[in-house]
Length: 40
Image (cartoon, rainbow, N blue to C red):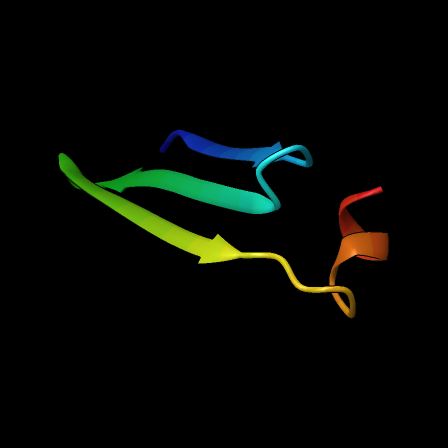
């Protein structure tokens, strides 16, 4: 299983990618001010 989390602070967005049983799942979400400190 491959798991990756990519955060772009300049775009204030994150992409979580993981593969389970040859199924790729991507989760895209935007960061707001309340979540920005978690990425830092």
